Length: 116
Image 1 (spheres, helix red, strand yellow):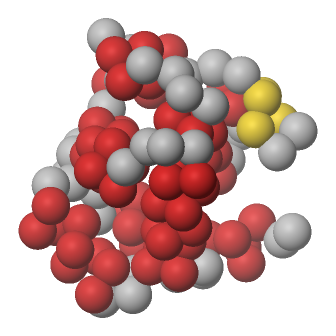
Image 2 (cartoon, one colour):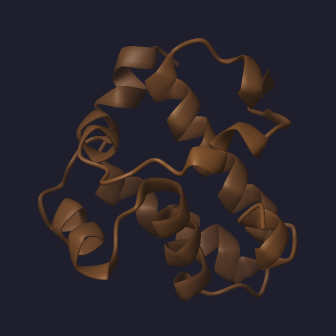
C-alpha cells in the first residue's frame, strides 16, 4: 500500500478495527484506549475529538500532545517490517500503534505493552 494513502486514512475508520481485534481476544476498548493514550499523550476527550473530526493518521499524530519517550523500546516485526528500522517517522508511529494493539490482542500484560 502506498505510504501516502495510509497517511490519509481516517483514524476514525481504523479505530473500531483496533477495538474489534482486541475484543476478539478478550481485551477491552479501555485497554486499547490506554495503549493509544500512552503512545500519543491523548486523553479521552482529545481522542474523541480526533475521532469526531475524522482526522487522518497524519493529522492524528501531528496533533498528538506528546509521543511517549519510551517508543524506542517498541521493537519487533509488524506487516513484515521491523518497527525500529522504519525510516519514515509517521509510518513508524502508525506501525508502533499497530504493534501495541497486536501485543494487546496476543494477551501480553499491560505493564509489558506500556514498557514499564
